[in-house]
Image (cartoon, rainbow, N blue to C red; front, side, top):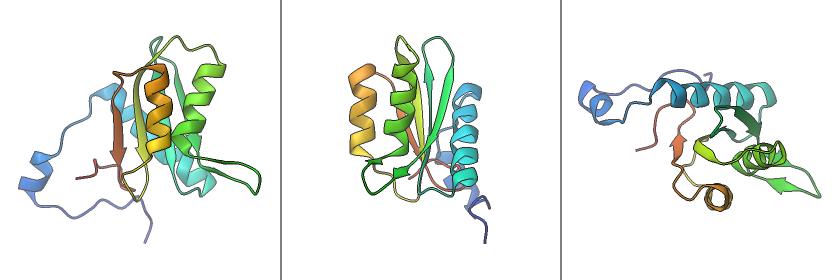
Length: 123
């Protein structure tokens, strides 16, 4: 079964989930596409304060291991991003403390959204 299939949820459960605005939904789409293209464990995307977006996948080499969010933050910082507005991590598990720490280093108030493989917010 492809991991982009929507989850079966009741109407009440769907209504309880926070809705993404258009810009955050774009981050979800970028994270999902990056993960699908690479086959990585995670996809992530961040938006900087100039509105530019950066999408990345997990790096898992013998000599280097980075979460998708760490890579996306590094891409933004190395491109001269003045700050971050928001971040999305698409993964089976809603946890990435190292990635969250990287976001907080750049923008302590920026939200980090964790979404499941279908792109829905983790409960």
